[in-house]
Image 1 (cartoon, rainbow, N blue to C red):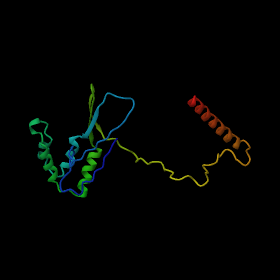
Image 2 (cartoon, rainbow, N blue to C red; image 1 turned 135 degrees about the horizontal axis):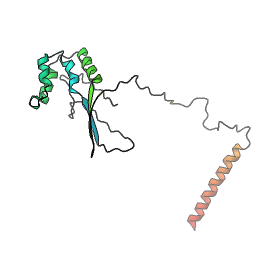
Image 3 (cartoon, one colour; image 1 turned 180 degrees about the vertical axis):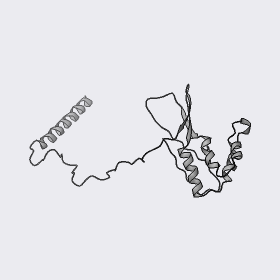
Image 4 (cartoon, rainbow, N blue to C red; image 1 turned 90 degrees about the horizontal axis):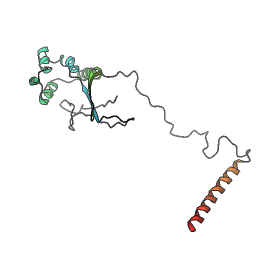
Length: 183
């Protein structure tokens, strides 16, 4: 689940979703395997998720008009802006709306060459937040990266011999390559 967090507290009007730079939109590019015949997916809050919140500010008949199923009664973008801008926004009002949207249903759309899906589902409930494992930024003092921890060069007579053999093989290999290139 991808969640984007916005802070529009410095604005004087409500910030609604859309593609404009003044609107909220969360865009992400995800890589997955194996490949599926899917080109893009969208999700948005189910309009009924707003009903309970709007009932705090509008009468039931006004809400019935807002959520009318008839196409001729559909709301324009400016009407939706007006509905939300007429609300006196407080910290409590913001939390109530945020809660109704984060626990309400989502409509998901996925498209592809031969794929179209629409599903109404609840937002998944996450039991605990993700905690990244600790990152070690420095090597511990007890580790010396210049020595092999399995051998002690002062007591192992072969530790220097292995390095000498490796060096000899490397020099021999370069000498052979040089001879091939000269001829």
